[in-house]
Every structure is written in C-alpha cells, then in structure tokens.
Image (cartoon, rainbow, N blue to C red; front, side, top):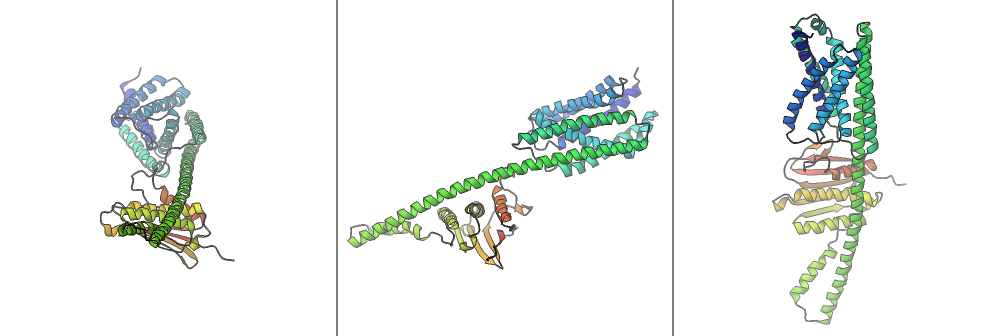
Length: 441
C-alpha cells in the first residue's frame, strides 16, 4: 500500500518534470501557428500533464527499472507531444523535432542538477519532508538558468524549415534516434547508479554533450534551410527584376521612337505652315521633351533604370537628382546593375512617397570613382523610426521574413564584387555601396 507520504512525494517530486518539459518545448515553438484560446489551452494542458505524470508514476512503480525509467519518460514525452498538437496548428512531423529539442533542454538541466545537487535526494529518501521545497526550488532554478542559456544559443532566432523535405526528414530522423538513445542510456545508467559515483558523473556529462550536439545540429539545419529559402527568394526576385528591366527597355525605346517621329512631324507641319493651334503645338513639344530628358550616365542599363524611375518620380512630385559616371559600371553584369540600383532607388522612392512636405521628397544618387573604389550613394528623407541591425535597416512592413529582400539583394551584389554596404541614419537615410574597381592591365 502507498502511504500519504509516498503520494505526496510523487506529487512534489514529479510535478516539475512535465512543466519543465512543456516550457522546454515552448522555447522551440516560437515560429509555430498557435490555435485559438492558446493561453487557456496552455493552462489546462499543464494541469492535465501534471496529473497524468503522477498517474503514470503510480502505474509503473514497482514494475522494474525499465518500466520505471524508459517507459515512464517515453510515455510522458508522448503525452507532451499530444498536447503540443492541441496548442499548435502544425503537422505532427513538424512538432516532433521541436518536442525532442524541448526534452533535450529539460534533460540537460536535469543532468546538471544531478551532478551538482543530487545530494538533496538523500533527504527525500530518508523521509525528510523538509527537503521537498529545497529540492524542487533548486531544480527549478537550475532549469531556468540552463534553459535560458540554451534558448539564447539555439532557439531565440530559430526559424521554421522552409521547402526542403529532405532537411525535414533528416531532422525528424535525427530527433527520433536521439530521443530513443537518450531514454535507453539514461535508464540503464540509473539502473546502476549506486555502483560508481564517478561513472555516473561521466555518463551524465556524456548525456549533456549528446543533447547539446543534437541542439546544435538542429540549429544548423534550420539555419541552412532558412538561408536556402532566402537565396531562392532572392534568385526569384532577381529574375523578375531582369524581366522587368527588359520590358522597361523595350517600352522606353518605343517611347523614344514615337517621340522622335512625332517631333519630325511637328517640324514638318511648322515648315508647311499648317493651321495648327500654337498652344497645342507647345503642349506636344513639352510632352515630347521626355525624349530629351532621358537620363544619360554612360551605361545603357543604368540609363534605362533611372529614366523609368524618373518618369514615375515626376508623376508623384519627387525630385530625383543624379550625378553618375555610368562608365565605371562596365565590369558589372546587367542583372547586378538592375538589382543594385533598382532596389536602391525603389526603396528611396517608397520612403519619400510617405512624406507630406514636398520639399522633403528628394532623392540624391551619386556614382563616382574615389581612390580606386566605386562609390555609390543614395540619400533621401524618411518618416518614422528606422532600426539598423547587422548593417541593414529592419523592414518597416513588420514582416522580416517576407520583406527586406531589396537591401539583402544590394548587399549580395556588393559582396559578389568584393565590396560592402553601409547604412547610416540621421535626419536622412544614407545608403553607401563601396566596390573595388578592377585593376586595369
């Protein structure tokens, strides 16, 4: 028969485990889609998991070391995964690696506790009820400290795996194998815990190392997935920019041809003395002035980009000033020029379009050579507050995963040619791209 003391001991000693396991899992679930009434679901699931934990302990107690260790913790983990499914609207295959990572976090804190504070169990085994609160309190403190460090190292900036089914399968397989190995080895170790204290410490350190390895591999896989997804998106955007450039070039060439033809027609009308309203003639000449106002920098690709953007700026009341030595861009491909200047000017246009004061709707572009370096600067006013992280401004659209590719594309082009991008913010936004010019032979 179980005494009141046994039941109380089970409640106090086992309650922290499901809560720590749930907290660990939540640390790695930041990018999952939450279900409705998430907080209420979380509270209810925590209470039920604690109750199930105690029930499972009473169920397997006395059934042998395998049941009391491996089976008990495996069932606990399975229950936690089921509740994760109730909390998050994600596939089980997505939740399982996250749950294993949470278990690894709990397991690491538990091993640290056992190595340094395992002596607190002696009081519990001797029936000293006063040790319960100390036992639980120290356990929670160790868990919070360890999980905080692990969260900062492996979970804080983690993002979901995007697109790569192979990476997802690899992570799932790795998670399942690691869980089985840790459960079985921990159970066998605890079976012989009283035979060698030194061996126990060594095996616990090995468990910590194994769990840290899993968390690191998971972090690397997620980072690789995110980088691949971002690169694919950048390639898609560059492809679209190239297609847009080709279309813009065709449109501008067509406009220029039509304007050129129209000018000759007007000159012919004037020479022939046709009875045409002079005001209409003057208006047509102003419209045809588009042909003469085409920006010419010495680089055809840059000319087309700036001409197209300048037409839009004229329509929106934005002044685009440009002092550019386009001949210095001869070493760059057409696609790279499109990405760099197209994104830089587009970002500036988007920023000044939000300004109410017409005097502030100004964009200044400069391309020049300085000390063997190609120096590209774009300056414009802006509204609101800009945060610069890792040398680039954070997206103002509130979605860093789906926006901000313009600046990343600019940096990618600069780094391709051995250059760098810098951003400074004061009263104005200053974008600077510095690229070493090829050495002339």
